[in-house]
Length: 255
Image (tube, rainbow, N blue to C red; front, side, top):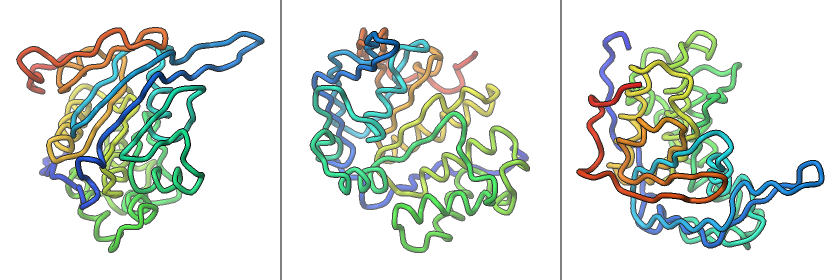
């Protein structure tokens, strides 16, 4: 990282209260009709997270991980069941309420980065702050880029950044919203080990600062650093545990 000093500070604003990080899923199903048949992406899922936490949802491809993330993030709606996020019942919320949730409560980090190619790193991050309605969005963006060690790369476009730098810009954009819930879909999947560990360090620091961080991954090693691990298989939760002895040190990871 070119010797840049990384400050994994909170990047949390006043919205991150106890109610603002609570997740409740009750008997949630998400079924899809494919070729005349029904695919049960999620089936009778019950999940409750009542505190700021670093949660890893672990499972192979097709287990329902991304479907779960999309439901929690109000990007999709369940076939049945109820989802309550930060005090709002998503399954009965109005369109305006869902838009507010997506702007003011949850932020996504996608494996594919989803940066705007025509914007600089700073402008990509500022976009997140602008959408969330944060004051002094440009200043917030610059501060968050410094936190992720990219203060000197703000004028660069996505194609001028490495994969690890692009992922850190994507995370910075999510952090710039100040939203209390951070959802990350395979955030280390396209990264080398060293950069992947740095990303995990950043995400865990956000949980320690008061956010609820939910990471979905197929990488069992990553789950060792979580405070709680939810295992999915064929749309069902098959395990829900906290690591014995607490989360593993990042230095102990290998893949």
